Length: 262
Image (tube, rainbow, N blue to C red; front, side, top):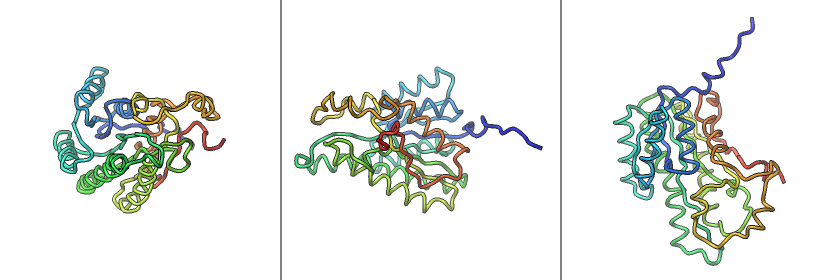
């Protein structure tokens, strides 16, 4: 006898605790909103604690559960303290979403070691630290877990100049994702990455570097006809942390409106 599937249950995060780095704005904030809407208690982590607190307060005011945490991903001690605080204060840690990142731009020959190290320290080293510490908690608790890293379409196919350091750091995130997925699989912890295409955020607009020619942007629209929205990325993240995706790990999901198919 055929029975209908409880589709809502496949996207139910009630009782789960989700930590989102870079949760104060943009894709991170939207991811916090989506995870809270699915029932998770969300730890909103960001170097900008007042903005993180504002995001958490908005979620609580809307009927969700959230708490803000300050973290500097460049400082190992800050990451360790933040993960410990989330586990201690919220009781568990089931989901980690690494959204925090920098996208400073500079053409290849003008790229300094300072810029290179700055982006790698936040985008790659910071993701490594949060994964390492979250994995320790998830393994100790024995409940499995979900980890999602935000990489970039540019990590597999550059589409305009000035992103040598950024795209290189995100290529490292892809390798980190696959290796962490391999090591953590036996513990029921999945690790995947979402690779956004050109997604409009306030942080992207503030990123320092050579100005981007507006005419070039017009010609960069993907087949689906628009740039990405934070909700496009948050939807993909939600899928990868929910029960619906329990047999998916080590994958790099490109969410780019079809750009790489042009």
